Image 1 (cartoon, rainbow, N blue to C red):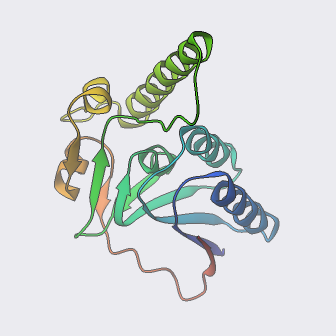
Image 2 (cartoon, helix red, strand yellow):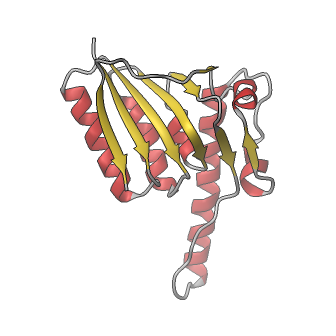
Length: 183
């Protein structure tokens, strides 16, 4: 039984998504019995966050996620892929409204497309949080958090919201194989 640990300390973008999928795939090919994903991320691009979540959910081995210090924005979605979710005592989770950067001029059709995409990302985000935290003592109002009222949760609040199962400093087993995604 070999645990593989992936230390993800990066923004979520095309480059880090590719690195992450590569490291996870290598762990599975090397017969990992479990994948522990230790996250410290300020978030990033929605499309890559959803892709990383779906990829983790499809793996044929158990996935555990751990908050190393801060999991923000789209990082919350990746974090929720863990069947077991833990956090350090001194950590936080941040939920805030989506924002996009537009470059150059935009016509009406393109602006409508952006608005539809933003709305659908909000829908997917809320659906995943609801699915993964169902039955929480204090469920999160994701539509409000992502459109109007940002919020930081400490580990105790994260337990009540169903984001984590427990506090744990989560030392990796001495025999663990370690991978790093950083940019």
